[in-house]
Length: 432
Image (cartoon, rainbow, N blue to C red; front, side, top):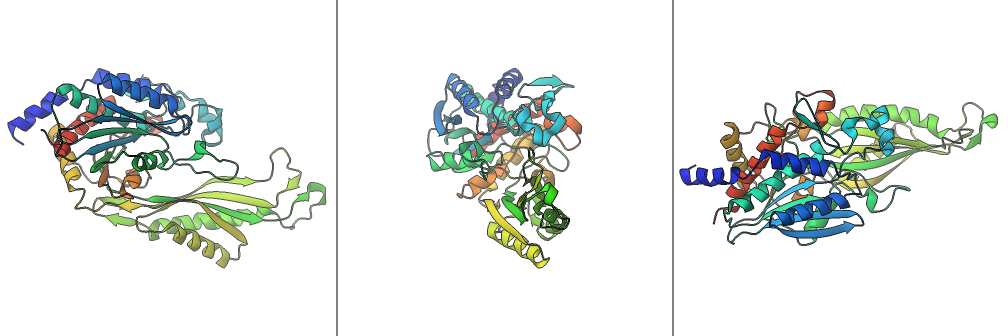
């Protein structure tokens, strides 16, 4: 790297201020935006982008669901680069989260309100993904403020519907659309680029800011057993009871999940994916009417699938296994998102840019990404399925943190993320 390049980088980095970053993170976290209700935070980001002098695009994905896009136009002749992150949060901070969080539902860490404890930032969404979104927004604003003209466009996309969910049964409509819903809308409605960086946690095995270009997909399966509806005083023990029939099925699913992790393990040049299986919900009967045994009992599975595996393949495999064991079950699929691995040659400019940025900022190249950050699903897959060379790279809570710290962020890491994104944009888009 020559002195002119260093001078250009330092000019941009001088425009990235920690106070501005913390202020933006605070504003975004303090606006509740559980999945399906991201409208207010999207509007806030659009106003912020306009104040920075950036071109804006407002995409109405559905009622109260806004993709906020900011564009820093280049002079032409250079590659364009999207930074992508999501504004929806896993939890709402209300009693509706109780079936998952239990007594933890009203803890401060689960609320959409940012606070500091032990020099770390807490609040629902700060880790996933408003911290990294704030980092690339600040980077984009710094590029604009520096006065340095890029050749290619920098496109900042804060999208809805990344958090995984899927319509099923009575849970229907836009509120339940997730798993890349906002990014797919983005890419199908005029916002595209030559390259993309998904700003999500990507901890290396030894330190921050590694990257991945492969992630698993996800299949949601409903497995049902059947029985006979019967009034309690009329029950003879041993009668067809859907819930009792589900018990051995659950044990079989548990064993299958452990085998599945080993047989579907996926190695690639950048790391390893260990696809997991989870029984996330069970349904049968009426809590207010337990005087009847239900005729149907269902469990709902999340099955992660490696790149190259077809969703239908997994459904068929599980269905055949359960029936071979003598279980009378019905298996249906209600989410089917494939996993992807990018072409290594096509992502080389991104890999080089992030590597050089990390070396410049932290003195060493990224190390191999930890499986904790390759086992998950995120919008990397939405970009790869339309052929855009993409990597995932962002600040993470860290691998050594425990308890509530796992959902917090170090502001210094977010500041480094903003700087890394700015340098990556300079290298990818080129200086005019």
